[in-house]
Image 1 (tube, rainbow, N blue to C red):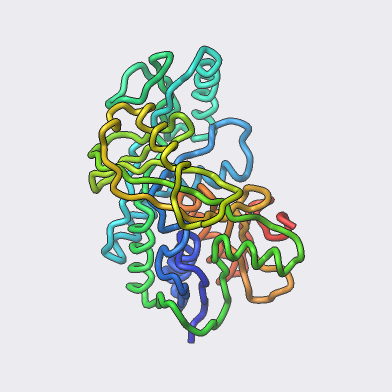
Image 2 (cartoon, rainbow, N blue to C red; image 1 turned 90 degrees about the vertical axis):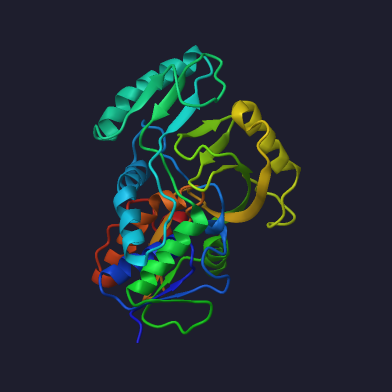
Length: 341
């Protein structure tokens, strides 16, 4: 018999399964598309915080999850024996003008409070590689980290299996059921309640062959540039509400690549080795959807990760395990299913 069935083998589903398995629950993960078969199998992997101002439960939740990142992913790797590609490498953001400089300096002050003195948000005049800056200054933060998305899913799956769980494409639902089914799951929730709770947003991203593995990631010209441990750099992504084919790349990705090359001259000649497209689940409130499924006893939801899914996955798993196994509701206000109705 299985105590918990998790539907979905992406960042949220596998993190929930891992958290339950570490507490002794017998877990089965079911996903017809396989491990990382949806948006969690992407290429970017930016674990970047919201700006440290106008603090709210969502930002606090994300900070706690990012702060736990090294410990969480180190534990996953130790149990399952598969590397997740995690590293806290920090981030650079060009400062465009005097107004942006004043804002960056103000955020440096609030970061000391909201980031509890553990990480810094600072203005710097030098760095280790080349994002263009009109002022010659950049914001550097030390909280931002990276993950290799598909490898992270494989690491979580390996850890779940090492703890006695199952990760399968087909299986029987037993015990409590956690629905972590991404964009398709948002559509199913909306159909159940007769109103939209979110939508699928298409993203396109690319991988370039350029070895900057120990350098910080960059956010410039609305593009994330993420050096990975395998000697590649991921760039992305688009956010498309209207699209014809969710799985194909097109000229919009070409524009992203061009912006990345212009922002980071070191990438000007780096060849593109992979192009990726997929659907990410964006909740109506833009906050993740976590907690009990109203009017379906024994069923729970973990969805709406959108662009921050891997960053908050450690906390998502812990919160769902608390609720499913112990009946402890630690879901932040604004995150529950009913908050999106």
